[in-house]
Image (cartoon, rainbow, N blue to C red; front, side, top):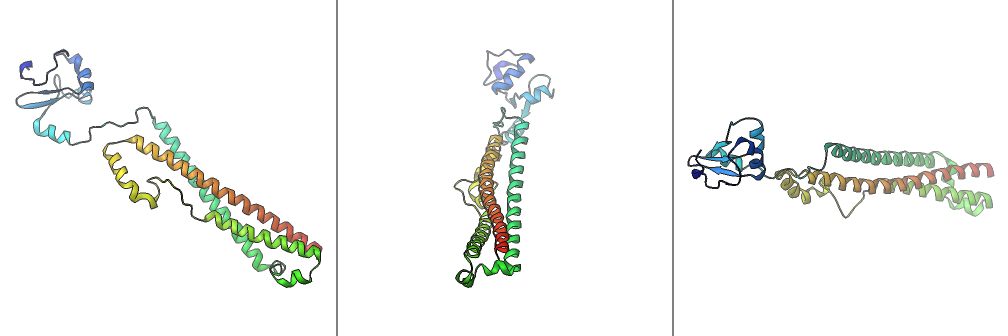
Length: 235
């Protein structure tokens, strides 16, 4: 090919096959009267063309319509993606476990209050008006601890509302849909990694909040059982 026909021929790059990788990295285009030549590193490495890598003009136009930006996560390995995904899965499981524990505590306390006549009596005025000082003390402790435990269990499963969100939350999807679509067009894997990290932060906050109330509910359950035993002994 005569260099005179190349509209943007770079005279500093030698016209040899050894310069293909350099041309591919710099994105040099070589034009002729009939073709537009695009030097691309994959096509050179695959040996699709022996000398210049060329496409007809119509094929080049179709090629140019594809996303031209490369992924922005060359420094993020697949191992880190797998690890952050595993972190999200573990946090999801821990949140579900906290809800299950709260459900167990709530069910036990509700059955305990309904099935026991002695427990139901601690919510009546007669117990405090006519009971002994010990019975009044233990009855008040039992009533307070049982109500406290039930309320704490309810707070575990209460929906949380945070100031930040990710595309993984269905309630915030309308706000993140366009950003996600734009990142998909650009093949921006950094966006995906950041979403996983932000989602892990949110799940960690939710899990810590839930387990705080699970701990309080469990302690209330223990106090309720101890107060019930003491009430039976005092009677």
